[in-house]
Image (cartoon, rainbow, N blue to C red; front, side, top):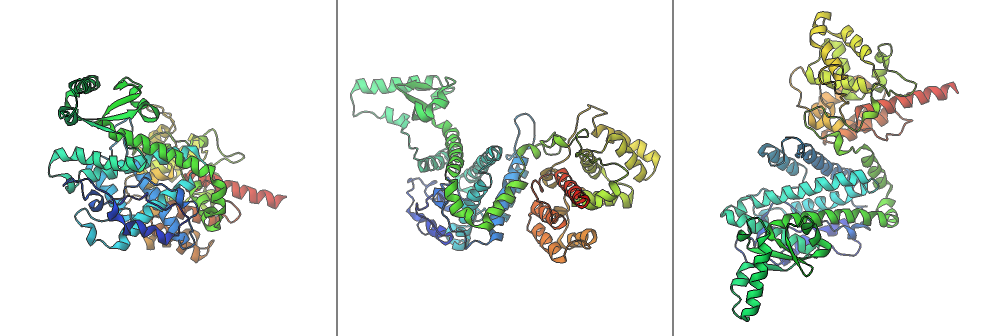
Length: 550
């Protein structure tokens, strides 16, 4: 394992980020048969991300495509983690689930954040691969923080997911073959790694061992008695305190108070006696605090950043683009359930000003203003006069978000459905339910992009739901884009959009499609929600018409 925060304090070139690998054996290890090689044989980078030395990083040698890949790949990892993480108020499957853990392992490996297979010794792994993996982990973390530097909500989401990512890496390491010889070693090995990470923050609190007290034969009886009495007092307030073997002596400020506020542990003379079982909690607290401070530091040094990294127009433009299509965690929590999202402004009573989507204009509007996913669904409905469950639900809620009234949707679907009797039996109730007029009368919101990309099951035969940028292979996607937009946008644009999709950048593909179709509009907010695409497109066309009339 390579600890990625050992960076020089002088301005650095990207090529210099390989230097820690050349000196990785200089790290001091405890003499423990299970721990001595932990940082060299684990398959992930564990870093505390000290990025202060990156403020003046020269990015000229980093292509804009690689920059984009670094940022969007890490964002994809964090989105996946958030979508799979357990919410405290429901029973969503968590990252402890073996299936989700395997999926995350695979995704981390595919995106270049895994050093090597756990069975491969580090000395048999390509040095260039090690350097690239470590560099990508460090830079993607830093660059994504630049994207979220000016938005508090995004920062909170980022910090929450980064903590989960680090804990996932840690748990994967601890439960790997390195520590499965004896279950007793898992606990000690976990403490060992976390203690090493804490020391990188300058946290090195004294550890008081029970064995030290038992073996205090070289001091007088009075001191021995006092030490034993203090130990007994400290463990007496702890549940199963007789099992405690080690205590951290943590000053009340700045770290001890958070353990004492609920009177869980013993305090004397300003020193809190905390069992080593709390070491993970202490590390999470310190890691979160460091991440928060790093955002503060970025903001305080914004002028310096504007003269260095952000002075590169390529970088500043991409950062702005990434930050614009980012969506908050509320948009994609909840797996397969219908949860409300922040996109409630586009309800049926808040349609776009001066524009109402209805049966009289939808056949023109869908051609110009529906995002690809919704146009594909509507084209399929027109052609087949039928859609399966997830496709129907995705389109119903989108049309509702576009301001289409309930009666208008009922009329539209009845006119397009296979036959009236089938519509009344299969469809009518469910549309009314989507509008909160049946069942629990919940006011369901349109699906955001991440729900469509990650939260719905993959479409099978005869199914059309989801995001075509993800669900279509390269050639069928290019053919679909040419069919829909080949008469409007250059073939080169279609190839570029397809290439973005092939690289896994589905939302950026949608942004680029919007830009190609709306040359006189900015792309603010595109890529986070289909209704945002629709609203922006409608506004663009209305503005064009108004300019013509003026």
